[in-house]
Length: 358
Ligand code: NAD
Image 1 (cartoon, protein in one colour):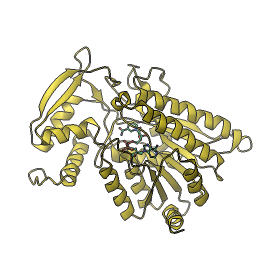
Image 2 (cartoon, rainbow, N blue to C red; image 1 turned 90 degrees about the vertical axis):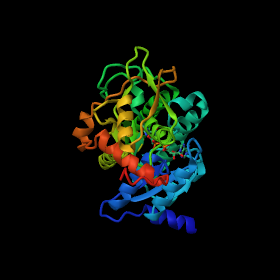
Image 3 (cartoon, protein in one colour; image 1 turned 120 degrees about the horizontal axis):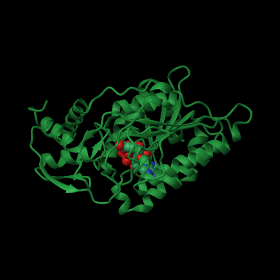
Image 4 (cartoon, rainbow, N blue to C red; image 1 turned 90 degrees about the horizontal axis):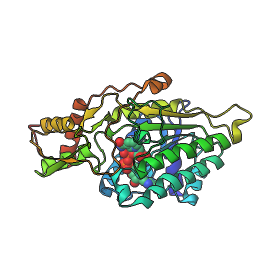
């Protein structure tokens, strides 16, 4: 009973016309930032996360404590727990679902392929089944990925470009997610927005990502491995700062429309949309390392290697005109500034006493 009361309280909105949002993956990097931003502007938020050990669960617990301090409850549970999912929707009439829980990472798919099927396919379907049966049916905004563009080398990527050449199992599950959500939109009238994030970075980030592990290794004096393409070209990414991504998430939630029930016959069709959320300025990986060296005031020991065939693509670059037009998405943080904020957070979180950097 106490638990039920906490969930209802956490879901309560404090502003007229505000939303009650279920945020899946709320103890994750992007989910924790989005949850805090929603709460700050007066929306109700209930988080869900299974706290898996893909990377350091203590970082997820620390994010959960931060959310807790802002009166956001993060329920510990799995997307595939049908009973728990139904219970959450029994307790709260969620107006939106921000679905960010997933098995992320491209390379880990070679070690543990079934975790991608479990979270990104089966978990997604369980969530959609729950939303389909909920009354009212929430609008869904979910994390797809720039990886759906795969081996397509026509850049910048636009939403209508081909996505039929995934380069990794991760990318394939995100592409499958787009097909699955489209089907639920078409048959059951669920309002769906897919967000194709481009390499998101920032404070409270993911330890498995290059900028994070480079920082750790540079500080520990360890050699970092920088991959190059087969033609010796540097890899480049359209690195996008977390605060810009959060604004894109809120903008897409605000315009997510409404679900209309089966086929949307009475009230017209529910929307199905996909948007790129990137920064539009690809940066080469060696340049990223130069910036980290500058902020950390430590020289990196670099090893340059040819990229193994592990699912990474050579280059990403977003065309964001669609998101700009639909909800005014406009990234404002360049990589220099964003990495400075990340480095400050990193040094403070891991207890480095480095006054020279502040
Ligand atoms: P993250 O790993 O930090 O967050 C995902 C969270 O989901 C984790 O806390 C994890 O414990 C939870 N989770 C995983 N499977 C679950 C399940 N079955 N049930 C309940 N919880 C589960 O990753 P992130 O970087 O915050 O990414 C959020 C979303 O954005 C993911 O869908 C990811 O694929 C996508 N994405 C991220 C990036 C990026 O650069 N960070 C780029 C493109 C897409």
